[in-house]
Amino acid sequence: MRVLGVDPGLTRCGVGVVEGVAGRPLTMIGVGVVRTPADADLGHRLVAVEQGIEQWLDEHRPEFVAVERVFSQHNVRTVMGTAQASAVAMLCAARRGIPVALHTPSEVKAAVTGSGRADKAQVGAMVTRLLRLSAPPKPADAADALALAICHIWRAPAQNRLQQAVALHTAKAPKGRTA
Amino acid sequence: MRVLGVDPGLTRCGVGVVEGVAGRPLTMIGVGVVRTPADADLGHRLVAVEQGIEQWLDEHRPEFVAVERVFSQHNVRTVMGTAQASAVAMLCAARRGIPVALHTPSEVKAAVTGSGRADKAQVGAMVTRLLRLSAPPKPADAADALALAICHIWRAPAQNRLQQAVALHTAKAPKGRTA
Image 1 (cartoon, one colour):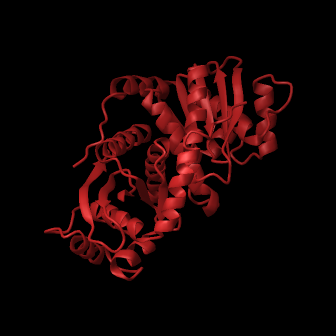
Image 2 (cartoon, one colour):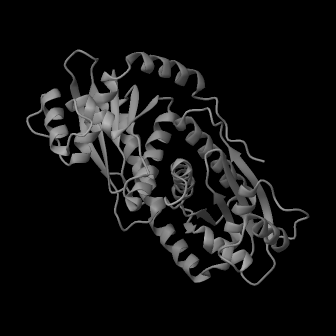
Image 3 (cartoon, chains in turn green, cyan):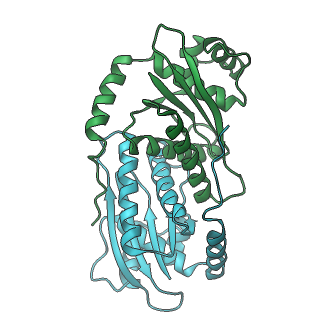
């Protein structure tokens, strides 16, 4: 199973591709960050995120995309940009018929460290160990994207198979109706 | 000046096209709602919003797109969907090099009714009068989209010209960098 994890953000959008199945050693296929200039206008930043995500989908052909679920309880200023970047990532995946899964930050932390309240350093350390890397991926957004992909591989394989079947049948179904 | 106003939402995304210049009678070119099924998954809903907006851009070729600025102070449950739908609308416009403007709900209300705290009925009544319609557009999302377009035509014509010039020069510039 090949999964693209996306830690959404406008300034830095973490992306990481992991391959493997639950219970076997995992392999990192790629990791990086899609950046957009903070001084560009919002529309152009969203276009840049789209181009970056499209490039990762083209290059790595993931079967699933796992995106961090955004909550609006957090920092009011950054949460809107995060929600908007996550929308672009979900749109890019859904347009290709790739099933999209959302995982909360605490689900991701619990999956890779055993604790839903682990800090960034702990997540980075476990991602490094689980993927047998020589050093933690930087910046933290990149490590978080890999953690999301790992979390997705380990959680609910049965749910994935269901989602994939549904996605195959509905990829071309929804239509925007205009009046 | 032809403006597409977008009142973003996942369940109902209001869209309205108005043509005119400040100080002259305005003309409604089209109004409608892009709907997505509440039981579909988020990725497919965003694809449906994209298809709907693309259809409106294709049919009406607006020179500007005005989107309601989303605040996260409001209802926590709906605001994320609104932010995500607005991201898709901005993305569609920016991808074509169409300048995108954001207006707050109170700017829009103040523009069409004279009061930033006007209610839905008052906005609907003024949109009906300003566009010389026989009845208020329904649902309210459709009327709000027209109000956004009117607000944009009336506000800052100089700013629009600047934005348009910048958009022409930067439409193909931003690139998603991946590492």
